[in-house]
Length: 563
Image (cartoon, rainbow, N blue to C red; front, side, top):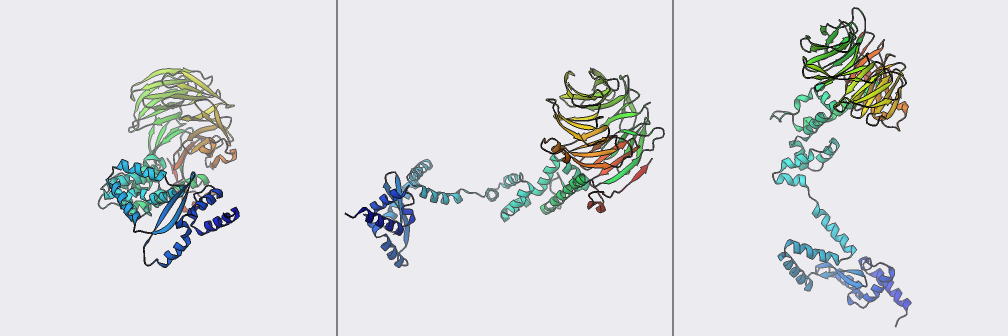
């Protein structure tokens, strides 16, 4: 019997001479040597090298097939790979197995294959996995049209964003055909217009809304038109956002030329008109495009301090203590509400409900069935000074007062809910939407509140005098103050407690020569009114090319209208 050292040397020599798959499945070198010692008695292994040489020499004479031999060694399996002829018992047995396999049901076939796989080692599992992966992959976008299901393929791809749609076009010609014939770039633009007010407004202002939301006519724009339109829209949006950040704008100015006392206390606008309430007791309606004064409404005996309109009526509040309802088209007075004892400082109406507030410290809640059928529902009392502003939705009525507090009331029951404390002086303005309340005060600050818990989320500092008006949307807060300045703030940053205070104010706009009384804004413009008897339109969309490269002191185009 040979010594152990000789057996070990021969085992190592044998390991080096056989394929790696022979010992790869063993858990350790000891198992490998043990398994290989057992293999030394096998003729197929002893002559492995000789067989390999002989098979190489006869390679052109006889076809070979790679097979796997499995030898049990305790719990381990050793795989021996070698070339063998396709003829013989193996081929016959394989054909017979396949014959039986084909006769079985699908469930029996699956069960049989599971048994086979369970008897294989990890190395074999890897080979099987590599073989199955491409078989399991399906190009369903290409396959669906072949089954007459083009609309399903189009519907699937229609959920992609622009970057993914670009990548999908490059997959293959069939994918590109589905995207083109399905007009998916058009559908993507339409989806953005439906869900994003910036896209909607831009489509109307740039005129490409005429190509949307219509069945594709035979002579209409092809998919390539929308494919090239999309990056132009993105460029437009990026330019608008840059103009807001850098303060680049085109400025138009309306000189109101009030006869007695100067000042524009309130305004509201849409795409066609601007309606303003003036200190001289009048209401003036301006054409939004030509800036011409279309109509002057008179009837109040005091300054028009607040207003709101819809497609049917204009409702105004005045220092004469009355609320008047006007026909928006004819200018005729439809109703006059006499309730408050002092000036009506603010009002809001929506969905059959109107809320007014007054210098008399009260809030009146009205049921508004029609312009001529308005009845008082409830009077809310609780503030200790003039109630300067109100806002509401289906859940809450929110009021702010010179007594430094914001009070929250239930819209349905008109019961008091809570008080928001924090401002150090009287509150002049606020806006409420969802859970967020934004307020401005004569302490020169702006505060953001969570209405549900009453917590102050952020204090914005920067104005030098009383903050008189404030509005916000999903991106920005815009405020106007008695210092004559309009400031644009980053709302999302303001809601992030980690954002430094120095990064919150994006831009300060200075053009008014008097106190800023009221402002309204959208994605493209700010319209503001002032004690200086002007209405300014700050246009961030139609900026002159000469101003595009300016960042610190932008050029502006002025349009003066005096009526």
